[in-house]
Image (cartoon, rainbow, N blue to C red; front, side):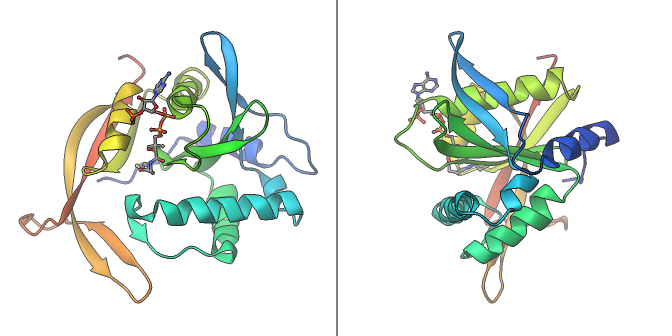
Length: 219
Ligand SMILES: CC(C)(COP(=O)(O)OP(=O)(O)OC[C@H]1O[C@@H](n2cnc3c(N)ncnc32)[C@H](O)[C@@H]1OP(=O)(O)O)[C@@H](O)C(=O)NCCC(=O)NCCS
């Protein structure tokens, strides 16, 4: 799949949201159900890189959730807290076309995350099953509203493994449609497994597929 990115205006918005420092957080997306606020989308910002007990808990949580869901990621490895901290610094907070939101109840309990990266919807995990059934659906709808109305993005893609039926029905519930499939091959490294797109013409060797899904603001 062709690599895309967000435009400069969108990157500027991500940067200004992520630069929140010294404990000051003023951006969040409210998540509503029947006109009642049930959750927040809270961006991960520079504040989350500070060395304090709250952030240690956050890194622990992200590591635990990543490991519990590794089979749904294109790169499968055993995440460590140190690695997660570095990833958050290098690949999220200091990457200009990426933003990641924690999904939190109104009482401040995190139960998942979701984000935007390189022109796509990205990194969806429900980390806790015992909180707010349907909460991720309402959270994604709130994020899409922000994407279309505030970021002025016209359409959004995502990649999901074709065998991830639960995630596919979740995305469909939020309005995404299946566009096409990408054949994948598995490569094994020393400490990781990677699912990579088969670029050559011979796609007979596909061991798994991505489904590329999209949603348009004109739907
Ligand atoms: C994809 C994922 C984030 C979706 O989370 P989720 O918990 O299914 O989403 P929701 O919070 O919206 O809950 C939906 C479930 O609650 C049910 N539900 C109950 N009340 C609901 C309501 N008011 N509105 C919507 N759904 C409701 C739905 O029927 C659905 O259950 P089902 O899947 O058994 O049909 C989650 O499955 C996950 O973390 N998967 C593993 C990681 C992963 O695959 N990520 C995607 C990689 S591309």
